Length: 308
Image 1: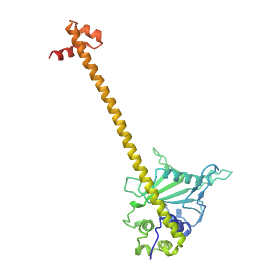
Image 2 (image 1 turned 30 degrees about the vertical axis):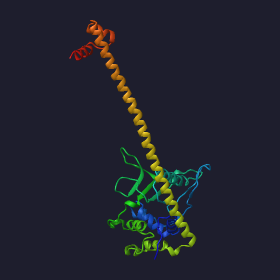
Image 3 (image 1 turned 90 degrees about the vertical axis):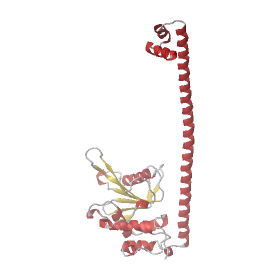
């Protein structure tokens, strides 16, 4: 049996954008619900197109967007490559989803939370943790939270299944995303034994896709590879330009510093010669100090050094 990678655009949207029971299991496993009553019971899919209130602004397309019976919205994104702007894009999309709940009456008390779940197939933090939970929190004193927006970022390359514990389904779903791909020949038994994971694995069997879909799947990886090459090239160019600029600035500063030191040294030597001539002509230390503006003790020190 051959499988496709569930992280690809085509497969991810098929698994989580067409099967309500699978996306419910996925969200309940990966979102930070602390109580059983907070868990999602049912969902309805919403348009993945987030249309701005201002018609001049550009629309955004997300991978999966749905809401539950309480009105809470859930945005799910699979991001293959990290970019510095990605967090701003996530914030923008979640904010649009939150604001879109308001009608003309603007009853703010009826606004429901928006959860943004972002699976990132890249590393963007220095620490060891792969799970990052962002909220709007008062930092200094109360630690009070402003409810409404919550952002979860998961760095898939950092994930390692250490133990099941209380988050068994979280581990299984992350194993599904990180262990199933084109090289998989034998699926681990613990994944197949779980009903939801087993169904999700069936959905990415190569035989379940048409020839046209498989061509689109290959095109996705080709485009991703090209984007990575462009990004690497851009980083290398930036490093080269930065080094060249730094060398030029360093040389310029070095020359300026050298010239400054040279001028200072030249002035000092000229001053010492002038003081020596004035001394030879019988001028006193106090008179030399008066004429040059140099303190008497410094004039006296220069004269003593010359006499040694």
